[in-house]
Image (cartoon, rainbow, N blue to C red; front, top):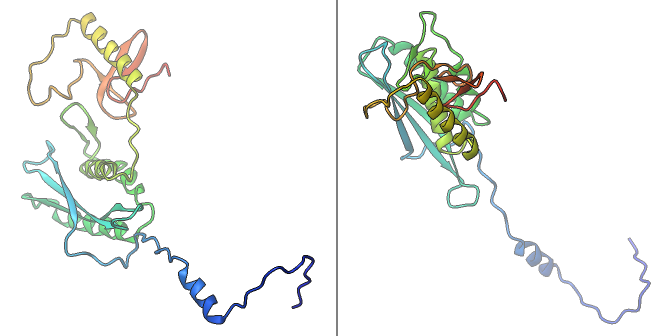
Length: 233
């Protein structure tokens, strides 16, 4: 196709084919960003974390181990993704469904995409025989729900789930309400035992948001000392 030149030609250069090839080759090739999918090959070594679950429903504890694969290692997009999960215990009472659960969850992990939905699905499982309270007063509707909570803790640890937490201002208000509640009801501080770090005032009610016995009535308003949920906004 002809090109009309409107300006005066002051210089020119003959471009050879090999020069064009060199210019194309000089363009840096950006490596493709690796994402999690079912064909990701399992490395010989994986980083993992183990979480202990001890319920009043069983004599023996469960140990939940979640192993992660590192994608895009040594790059700006480096990230840890859950690859597999194992659940072990001395108790063989729940062996069948535990093995089935670990295989299904591991398969979902390796499938890729947004796997955080697993947490809410597992935490929504209720035991028809009733749940139980963990140390610190948090209610667990089922053993499966506590496994889901362990997965949630792991995902927060590796950065898949963002934990905004409680602001310093809100925490200060909660501490003031707790001190006023204990003074009003003359509640002595508990001795330093295993539960002291997570205990809440005697008489606290169950919070409907975080399922913890940490909700108290102050100034005509129910306020949770664990998650900060308040009927007064």
